[in-house]
Amino acid sequence: MVQWLKDAVFYEIYPNSFMDSNGDGYGDFKGITQKIPYIKSLGCNAVWLNPHYKSDFFDGGYDVVDYFKCSERFGTEADFDAMLETFHANGIKLILDLVPGHTSENNADFLKSAENVPNDMYDRFVWTKGEWEFPEGYRFISGRHNRFGNYMVNFFSTQPALNYGFKEITHPEWQLPYTHPECMKTREWLKSVMRFWLKRGADGFRVDMADSLVKNDDDKSATSEIWRDISDMVKREFPNAVLISEWSSPRAVHAGFDVDFMLDHHGNAYNTLVRYEEAGKTSYFNPNGAGNAEEFADKFANWLKENENLGYIGIITCNHDTPRLAPFYDEDSLKIIQATLMMLPGVPFVYYGDEIGIKYVKGMPSVECGFARTGTRTPMQWNSKKNAGFSTADKTFLPVPDDCKPNVEEEEKDGNSLLNTLRRTIALRHEYASQITSFDFEILHAKGSEPLAFRRGVLTVFVNPLKKPQTIKRFQVGELLYNIGDAPSVTSEITLAPLSFAVFKAQ
Ligand code: NOJ
Image (cartoon, rainbow, N blue to C red; front, side, top):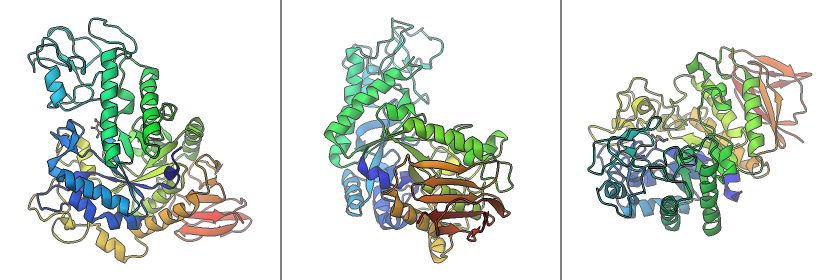
């Protein structure tokens, strides 16, 4: 496993929304570069940048027009390189978003494949043989181009599916097997995109919809075979580069990924911990206490076991597709939730703005097909000035709250703020991360909404999610290293203060 991941704490940046340096209302590379000292001050030593490629922005940049060019919205090629260099000069790795499954409908390769004469892009995308064919069980677009056929899409209708082939062939007239030479060319093209950015200095990729390559591949064995091939290439040619998948299944690390996100999928460990409410259930961290720690503990431990010695679980505070936890939790809960996420085994990802508790804006009108995700992509709030210091423009990509609250400037001033608490937790994580492998993990106590206790190497972690004190049986704990909320009292039992978190170190 790539060494630097052991101590990595990522910061996710949605480039539209982080910092606008030229007053056009959109965030940009120069703006990000200006804020690198801030990112470093958090203790984050790696950044995941959402798509920065030339795009039509019909899906927030996940509709790539040119995989080898930066979007002019974010600045010039030189601005990108300067940003990358500054990250590296500050000891911060930069991973890019890779969109392997689909392009934009205005991608030149797609437009060439849509011409009505066979050419070298003819099979790069999935087309039926005739314009009146609408195979059931697939999503095809018809009537947009003069080619005698309809094309398959991978996500929105603006995102034609690249052709990595099919595992089970049900319609031989238009489906190619995934080992077909034309499908192998798609795979080689993807490798060329990856080589291009890795040679330019990127430290790896977060791979969008990684499980979506081969179609009719229910057990994902063919898709996994492709990723193992690609991962072999990356490990051989760029041994320090990392591959992080949006897959959310232990299958991903078996397919060669270094990290796979545990996303907010209904009923999984992450969901039961913090986001169960949406389904009429109660999360473990619900401060009023009807949550269920066992459900989290069993699911998390099983997932970890399946990943053992292969790759990490990516643990998110949120991401650009998911409602932020604020305002569903207040600041005291957010502090202990973030601390728990930072101390779980895996690679943590802080979504920009979560460190200050920026709120999800429910009902925000959709922009660039963000739909309900739009309210989680609002501009970073730096201070109390115009647009919270994000931009000098009169109209910004998305609106900023009138009171500019919360913001970094104010959070900086308060030693006990969410921001400063997270900084301290990240520092603690760094201090011990290199000594503790991700798989040295044991759940000590998980029962209903009682305190959750787990051991990681020499550290024992306790969290009380409720607004009232709770007592559990005594464990061998050692010295108290760190606490949020009042310190626990350790007698013949351990009593945890309301909404508190504590880490002990074995002597
Ligand atoms: C997952 C990305 O995170 C999301 O934002 C995007 O819309 C889809 N994949 C399609 O690329």
